[in-house]
Image (tube, rainbow, N blue to C red; front, side, top):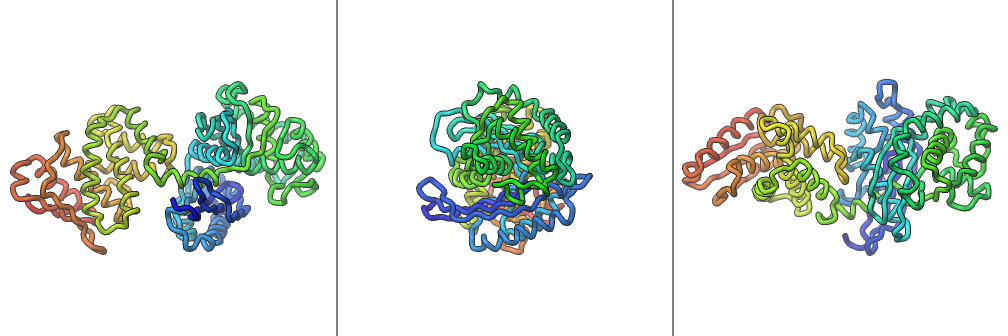
Length: 499
């Protein structure tokens, strides 16, 4: 990464959408611009967990404004992530397809634990270097993340489905406050968070930090009232609760330090925060400067190099966990990337490298389901990836890998894929051919084999074999003939010459 490069993170939260732009300078990212809009998508989920048209429109309108600011940024400079509301929404694809076009960049829906990891990264990078054990809590609109870590390493991460927007809608309808409503909301939050008690017990951490929305808002109010700056205490929470109950409603609340966009969700946020303090025995919590968006920015840096890309580590852990044949995986990996370099000769170098890295992951993972089933291992491998917690990966990334694993053998028509996606089709073909060529579980003879892709808009690939190759490797030749037939049932054509 060149010094001076601009990087941008877009956070599609349940309460607010945020855009953070920073400039890379000798390993650090310094803010150049920050935009925030209160979108409240979290209260736009209906009873069937579908986003309402109004909620989707609010999101699209905000992303259009962000997209205008990001005009001119390259793909590797921007990452957009979505959290709990879009994890829950049944119709999220409808929102995301248009959102991608409007913003101009893909949007990754991240799992709860991946969100927690990114939050910790954001908080840790904005704190002084220290060996202290840190508890980081982030109360969002529809989820609360808790992380224990040390330095830049998040060690224990979890996400709980309780947040300021969801709790405000449920326990403080129309913004009405009462002591009984706060009691009920806090008890309900404790019920959801109860399993955190043993995991995040007081002896597991030294200092508690609170990230982002709710905790930042509470800290601002307490500071304005004369409490120590940047600090939330039990006494401060008791004082704030008393003020909220006396106000009786969000509309009537007159309190210095609270922004107008925070009033409608402060009841739910305070209830969840009090539950966290009570369950974990927290006496004081420091308001952190870092948040999810900062973690996303630093994650962009780590993804630049394979040695620092956490996704590569997650792949290795999955391979080890499911005891896949590592030697065969490496063999398939080498052949698949060799074929892809030939088929994708016209791609820009950076794009080719990125696609090869993901093809490598698919090759390493293609047999992880073999411990479950010999005949249907590709189906089990795909299921594992679609349901795994794999740090560093967004849910769409894992699903794309699962499709490669599912499609590396067998019928192609069963795959729910976009056959207009030429890079993905090239990855899939190269993986399938590599598995065929390595079927004997030994290094194949690739001398004279050439793979060419038809120029756009052509939908075909040509695999050229040297004279005598088919006679020397009759089983491989037979499998290639079967592969030609498999592709005939798709919009693409595979031509194999020399068989």
